[in-house]
Length: 83
Image 1 (spheres, rainbow, N blue to C red):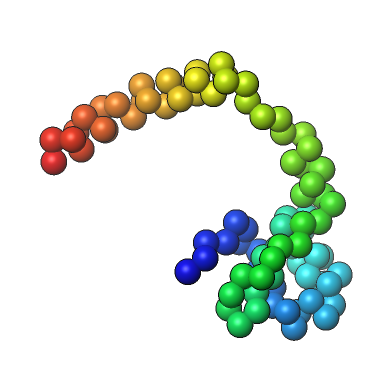
Image 2: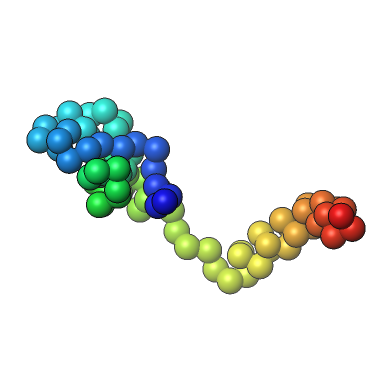
């Protein structure tokens, strides 16, 4: 089973009226299904604008995030290791 990257979905039949699909999505990406199988996504302009505001982390920033996460999760990992 394919995992969808968005909770918004529509069928090929609903795409006969694409504006309704986009209006219902409220600016979020929409997964397109055909016979319950994922065939693609529609990404409205609003979603692309939101994505443009984000940037990739530098390696130093990523290392810092991973260290913070590891420190927070370490007691749980230690507990689970003993089980």
